Each structure stands twice: as C-alpha cells, then as structure tokens.
Amino acid sequence: MKIRTHAQEGFTLIELMIVVAIIGILASIAIPAYQDYTKRAYVAEALSVAAGVKSAMWDYYTVQGNWPANNTVAGLAKPTSITANRVTQVDITGNNITIQFTNTLSPAPANTLVLTAADANGSLTWDCTGGTLPGKYRPANCR
Image (cartoon, rainbow, N blue to C red):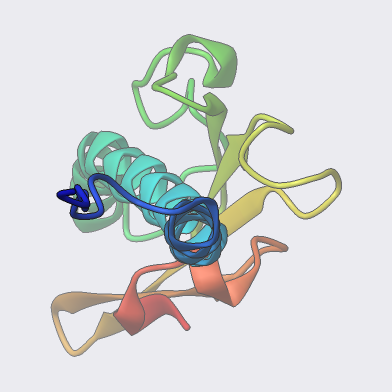
C-alpha cells in the first residue's frame, strides 16, 4: 500500500494575518506623512500666488517711498479675489502680506501665514515666520 503525501500549498492563516498586520503598520505611518506633504504643497502654491503681490508691493514702495495700506492702493484686486487651492484671500496691510488658508489646511484659527517685507539698503527682504500656521506646514526657510 502506497501512502500519498501532499506538499503544503499556499499560505497558512497566521502567515496571512502577519502580512496584513505589517501592511497596516506601514499604512498608519505613511498616510499622516503624505497628508502633511500635501499640505506643505498647498502652502508652497500659496507662496507662488503671493509672488505677484510681493512684486506689486515692491513697485509701490520704490515709487512712493512707503508701504501700501491695502490691496487697492497697491493696484491689486481685492483680497478675496486672490485665491488658490486652500487659500481664501491674500491681503496687504502696510509691509505685511497675510495669506488666509481654509480650515481644511489647518484647523482655525491656525490658518494664516504672514510675510513681512523690509528694505535692506535698497533690496527687499522677506520674513515668513509670522502668522498662525503650524511650523510643520511651512517651507524650511519659514520655520
């Protein structure tokens, strides 16, 4: 009489459970990191939108010798007309540009980034450490 033996085929239940657990752990680390990355991308886009506002402020300052009081004085559209993904408005007040983000970027009231201009002997420097936006969403030079 011949005994037939079968080689094991496939995976056992415990092996499959271990693989699922490892995938779950990796996902729990990767998803929050990706969400922070996308929010930093929205902030970078907002800084690109603010580049035009920076130019208008510098033009006004070089001609007038002082900072514009608001968007209209600087020759720009009203603040709520300057928008982008997750940006609701870009507002000028003196030498400050305030970028207002939606609450989906960061919970209110932590949703503004303030760029402050300074005249450094004929060249313009910008400080972007103002506002209430958390540091983890800011570009490296704005932390």
